[in-house]
Length: 229
Image 1: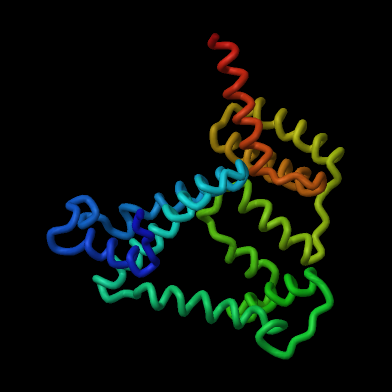
Image 2: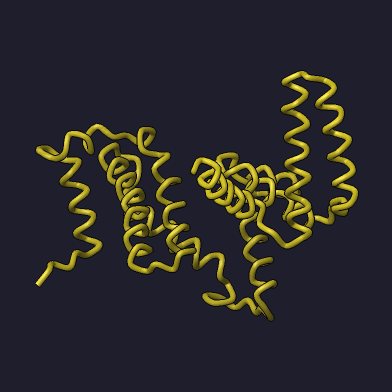
């Protein structure tokens, strides 16, 4: 019968790979050398979730978990933190941010749960303004995703973005300015503005901008295949 490995086995295997007599490649890795693997593994998991290929979902989930365990092992060796700290941190956060489950707070619906979560998060970070909340959105997120998250916070704070028809007119004007300038700095500035405006249109249409661009890119690959053939 095939051996069934456990969570404890995973910790021990990674420790062995990093230890004396282990794998030369694994032993050479640092937090910095493998940090981008987290992003790649995360997106591969998302792809399999969309495909509803559950065997592959389990496989890709393991790859993502490995990244967390690997970093924790490096942290253990350097005296920075360990896997127990990771588990403790997430458990404390879940209990703390669900006072309607683990405390006495009463909520009437999901919307109230999300608002309480956001408020607790702001309180934990000492945020007093919406701008401070926006600044905490990671700069390492994909740009469209980050823009969408920041716009979500702006809307909750009372900001009203332009209607799509005005956005279209505004983009046309920015295109004219950009093309007449032929300056790279100006082009970067206006392209950034146009993309941000497009994200606001996506929000109003109930479309995830990141997903929309990914789907169109996939369509382009398929169309290019026809062209190449």
